[in-house]
Image 1 (cartoon, helix red, strand yellow):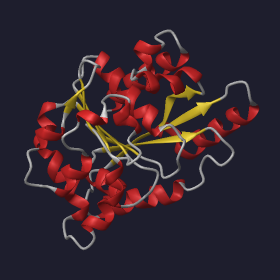
Image 2 (cartoon, one colour):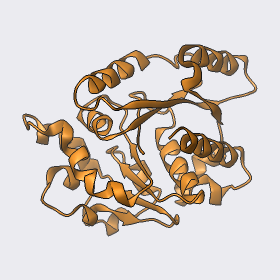
Image 3 (spheres, rainbow, N blue to C red):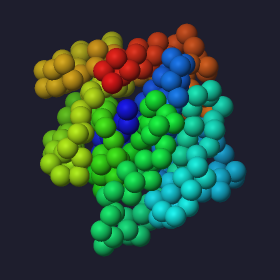
Image 4 (cartoon, rainbow, N blue to C red):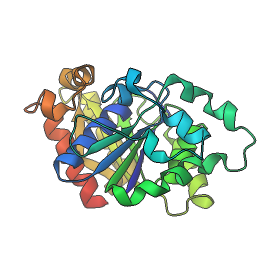
Length: 251
């Protein structure tokens, strides 16, 4: 299974979900690769130091002759490897403009790794540009995190339209794995109302698991740890493990 975690809105928990979903699936015995496709590099920085990198996602996608193994790095989490990102990934769209295979670069490059991993996860940037389209073309499934806020569904139509366009031509097998409600404040009526509305819109595609707003989840990347080792008894650890189980069951 290859999962693109996508939403063009920032601050909805894409990176937190990528990190902790990967670690949760690894704890359950799966071999997982995360490809950080966000120029902000927050996923990468949670696992590896940039000083030790000989190549990143930008070089991966612009140098098709280089061996993909050069871009895969082990992490401190057993069972999880990462293809890191750097800020230069922001130049990718300008670099590939006019290239006939621009939207297929990631799909072609990732092909040799599919047999080595049970799960490949793409953390995408908060845009619907070429990088996100590459992730959708290469993925088998898309997971959409949606923040539990008043404007939760704002822009979701654009994302769903992009997914349908990708389905219509370059990747007809792409499936919506599920919608994840994040940053939930269970004390407020607004959060409950927003969650109910999202479930009305997406029905069974909404995961049963929701992710609560948590200081521990915010702190763990700074310590270069997933939530399970940083705060194993926290609500975030319990919820992301529940999500991992749902994802593996749906896949």
